[in-house]
Image 1 (cartoon, rainbow, N blue to C red):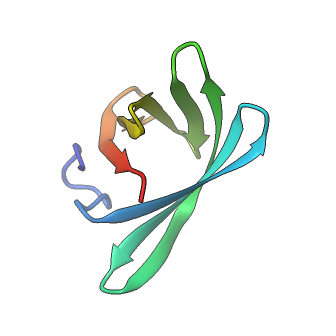
Image 2: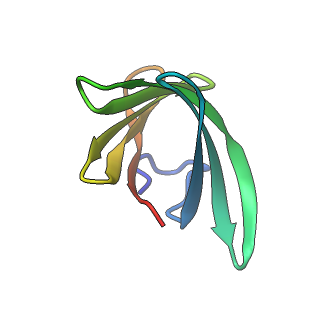
Length: 93
């Protein structure tokens, strides 16, 4: 859910594909779902902290932080100045 208005961020359905690329390192590819099409938003390379059960990564200058709880990922994307830009809730399908 978008937090900064106006902005190019839109409240939308999104799809994230998460691929393990090395021990504790993951690539997160984000897609907006428009109709039946998936539009690529970009990649995030993230590190998993097992102790905190958290994925942290950078998308350009934005910081992505997702917490893992019972198979569900939830978190935020913040701008370089710390402003929460997007709230993200992900469920595995």
